[in-house]
Image 1 (cartoon, one colour):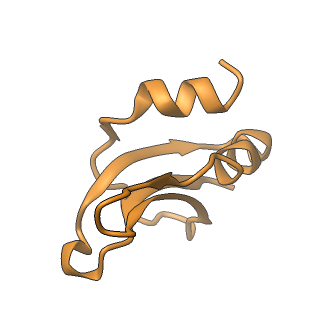
Image 2 (spheres, helix red, strand yellow; image 1 turned 60 degrees about the vertical axis):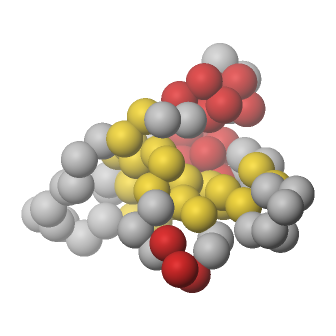
Length: 78
């Protein structure tokens, strides 16, 4: 099973605002990623949330994005 790890902006005006995207076959890594705390923006009430989804077999992968790699690593115990 392949998992897509995504961090995205909760503001519906910016639906394509992906701050982090990675792929993994590790269920444990996907579970840890889901536990990363939301980044809350104080001025708007929106934030960045972290979510994992299972990909369908042979589903096309999008480009990896690592803008928040340091935050992800710190919150996954790395």
